[in-house]
Amino acid sequence: MTHRQLVLIAAAGSAALLLGAFAFQLAGYAPCELCLLQRWPHAAAIVIGALALVLGWRWLAWPGALAALTTAAIGVYHSGVERHLWAGPSSCTGGGVGLSGDLLSTDAPRLIMCDQISWQIFGISMANWNVIFSLILFAVWIAAARRR
Image (tube, rainbow, N blue to C red):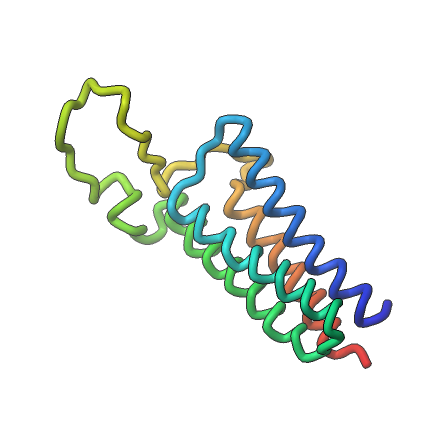
């Protein structure tokens, strides 16, 4: 495969993961704070891929690889929070949220907890899937960076 093809695959992979996340959101699976953080590096990878394809700057594959590795790292952290292996942000885990205001109000936005798995298949959560696919995309970006 050529450098261009690999960059296109990597950027399209991030776009597919982002579209999948938005599809889950439309289906009623609201994202938690860590889910939202995992989306930003994918968005960056898409922009990096587009710039690399348009401008022809081969070195942009390295920042693309870094973006994929960043979202994978956030996914590993999120996976550990979901599995209660370590503490997550106090803003979206069971232990750190204080109660205030009208508890019966339905007008307030629903807080999505980072330490609860909202969807999984084969015992693999969305954060776990993000890690798996992001590491594959990392490898594709690295291959693109090394391709002459």
